[in-house]
Length: 151
Length: 166
Image (tube, each protein chain N blue to C red):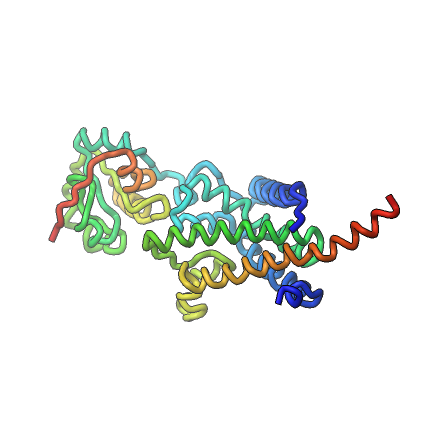
């Protein structure tokens, strides 16, 4: 199989270059350095900042489906699943309104639930930050998880 | 068998099918790069920044390689670029399957598929990351390698013909 590797590289480079140019010039592009799920007004915090907030008494909310929260969670966090927000929010509302800070998380950078929950909280006058890249980022930073099963 | 696969008609058919598929697969992604990035996020393979870069560049590589393959320009190299892409996709699919991640829409051809679930078509086994995607990509990988190796037979006489003139 005789391959002209310059042509091979040229196809990759021209394709990539065209993609970058299209992203910059077409009006359909997006900012490459941030998640496309995040919108203006979303407040993202890194795992280490979140840990500091946890130490200062911030209230953490798990936006994943409740079964995931039952299996493992950031210590002290409460379940506020995005798919059950309307039912789960009222019992938590007093605690949320009195919390020093609120941080919402879900299962990773592909998960939008934490952003959606934080936006719903903001609509109700509760300022909430989102853990950037979610629970995997927390675990990657070697921060503790509570794996005690919850009923 | 290899002689049959290297026949002109088979080579042309494979080029048109494979190149055409990649051109078709690239269009939706080029028109909606942010939506494609969302789909790549679901694979949870590379992190958001590399996913963004892939969402912006991969569709254009698909388009260029597919279009050149259909036109018969740089056939072997285009086929190898497509083979490389397919290896990347297969590797990513393997990690998704190994981790048990449920990807509702693989984003392989059309991003609109994610909104098409109410119609029931295409079925979920054809949309997500599973045996259908792996089988299809393996089949296309085979076709790409056949094209890359098949073009060699016609390259040799060209070189021979060029020698006396040199």
